[in-house]
Length: 371
Image (cartoon, rainbow, N blue to C red; front, side, top):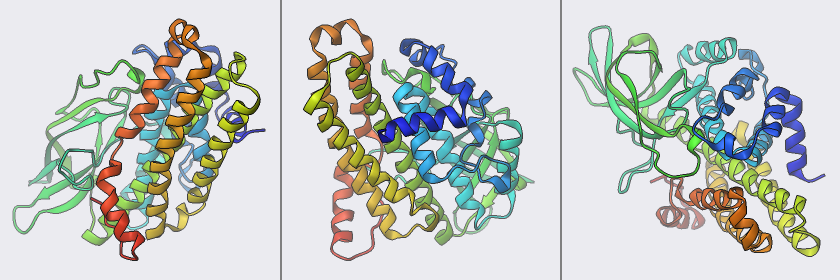
């Protein structure tokens, strides 16, 4: 069995109702704006898959999380992106729980108990700005804070139950500092605006979430010192890259599988495609095994894998589509959609060019600093 087949088996064993739904539903419906995939993911118990058992979750390991994302990516890219946002948010909450004040643990327990979906307004890619510095501001007021800002794109924009947001607090006295706000979607001042215009990944609900003078009480704000904030942010970022890589890898596994089923990919061509995908997956497994004990090297490793994977997935996709042929490409929208989505992998922050200088410093024996 290929690793992708093991991933599909894990999905069937862990979330059987979701696996059945994905198998029985047409690709076009799964990827359309009316898709029910996210709701089925929630109802099937997907929200608790990566949450540790001590909080009431299913307690999947990081490697099992990779396999789960691969299986989702192969069936529904939009669901993989949306579910990946939730899983990244869960991983970040669990990282923060190691140094937090207990609020994160209570949130994780509530997420499992009520099958809540969590979105994230942490860093985003903006030209010329650090991806680790939030553009969302929080002003201190009586009994709490008033938060304003925009996160775009923000997957799960419509279906989220809880939003975790990194904010720059502007206190009444003293210097601004970093904190994390936990905000229920029903809170007054939160709205969703149309943002995603691309014809693909429509079902991921990647829109703009607007925070307009949203009040957050002291009890829902976690203050983190600068060193712990940076470490938690980096740990969460490594999780984001791991989950994102797994999602896109699964998408290309799905493409290769469909091409094989249609008899367009076989023999040496099939072997070459699988060799590249299997080797890439094993590199993710190596990082997954480091997730409980991350070091400076873990960040460098996942970035190296991510940038190499961009080239591998582009190559396998191009070769596979050339064998699928023009008539099949024209008559089946799946192939054109996957081609566009795989290219979008390049746009996730941080861009390769932006990280060449920091990585060169790391390869010369210095600390790796995120930009």
